[in-house]
Structures are given as structure tokens and as C-alpha cells.
Length: 93
Image 1 (cartoon, one colour):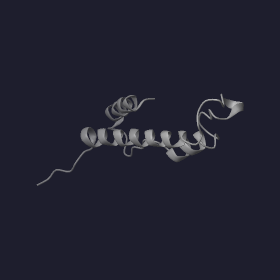
Image 2: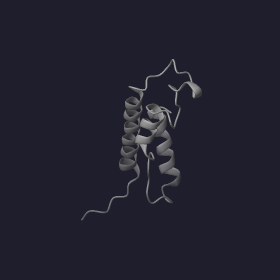
Image 3: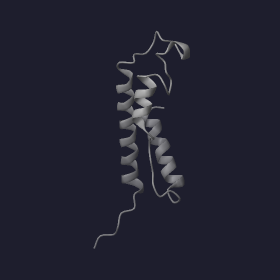
Image 4: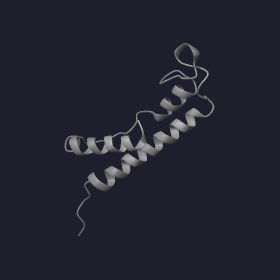
């Protein structure tokens, strides 16, 4: 999912479910997705691991950083949307 698609998905969720959700969370354990999925090949795609994918493509030395970078950008985009459009702020006097 591209970051723009995640932004649209987040906006949709905030709009549709915001009246029923008290706490929002974007990604559960992003380090696990990035490191264990793309470096250690335990979870996620495991593209660099021959039994589960094509080990001739991908790079376990760089992909975890690219994945983590994009997870953080997606998270920050969702937080920005929430704060600007949906967060209820107390009235000021």
C-alpha cells in the first residue's frame, strides 16, 4: 500500500469510526515488520529467503530501512490528518 493510499484509508477510518473509537493506533510493532520481515526474513514477505520467495531479488541490508522509513512516513501522515481534521480540541476562553 502506498503512503497516499494509507492516508486515504486513515481518513476513511477516522470519518467512519471516529465516534466509536477512543484510541487510535497506526501500526503494531513497526520494528517487527521492518526487521523481522525484511532483515531476518521471519515475518512479512521474506523475499530474500529462498524457500519462501525469490532470493535473487531484494536486499536484506537495505530493505528494513526502506520499510521502516515508509512506515514512519505513513504513520506521521495519518497523525497529521487526525490532528487537523478529527481531533476534538477543548474550547478556549
